[in-house]
Length: 425
Ligand code: LLP
Image (tube, rainbow, N blue to C red; front, side):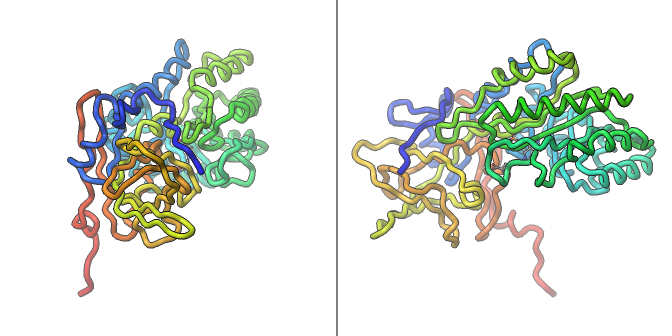
């Protein structure tokens, strides 16, 4: 059984018995805007970003928000206005950045399966860099760029074969993963890229995984990347930037990941020691910028106590919050308004017709039908992974800024869901 722990956060906390985000108590928001409902704190995102910015004072660094974590337009706008670039993985993400006011030249394009059409679109837009993930992709990008009379800026994503010690689905820098180019082949691949007329080598890139809570994998990966930088430059190929990926974890349930500024003090010391401290640096954080800035409010529909288990059936489900079903991930679930009295142990589940539709196992809660619960750490990889399974409309989203509440996404209607569908004949 798990007892509640509120991830350390200055902007989402109880005031008395009422869970509050910045200056706004959460209970009124779901009454006004319906449930389930995602609510984000702008101050929380900016303070997470500030930790990285502090870490890079005096350096040439670009923080490219990995928008797959949460690609809602207003969230992108917050990061664009705060001076971030963006890490994208599709043409859809490219269009979202541009629609939110982001600048094309601050964009880096990652991903193992970029299509020719996506490459063309990104080249036309004038993005900053393609992070190329295979030799075959290098050839295709070269062809596409030549056909447009352009040169594609590239960086090669190296797979440093470092264990990030995280969930297997979100570790990406091991030999058995589909990502990047094996570090043994990196030099050869750079030599090949440098010889292609449609490409311009601008950097090197590496990303080892996600929800990393230890600093050792980062330090090890940095050593390997710098060995490669040295070898590549010794072969006469200049690297303008070093992109160190994202992956820093957050506190879901008492994890203690390194703080961004502390981690970067150590990484920068390594860079300095080897003479690369004044290079252009790039990073691609996603989860650590938005994860603990968001909550999902859900209403208790039914209580169903049983012989073996007590079920607390809520109106949010695996289509809204896919991480528990997909990765057995843990999210804190806490009352929006605390009740006095004793708790019971509940399985918190959603209405979707799947036994895998659970949000939390064995949670100690004092709840009644009609209560609101908050699923914490819901700012990253929740709305961006939400689906319409069971023909459920996606939730609404609010952005709180001090005492101001902005509706940044309307609840999805059935008309929205069936918009592109046609009956036969
Ligand atoms: N850069 C690249 C190339 C990536 O593949 C990723 C995440 C990031 C940056 C951002 O990583 P972050 O800082 O957010 O850890 N859906 C999973 C996470 C998948 C992460 C995929 N790549 C989850 O809910 O845990």
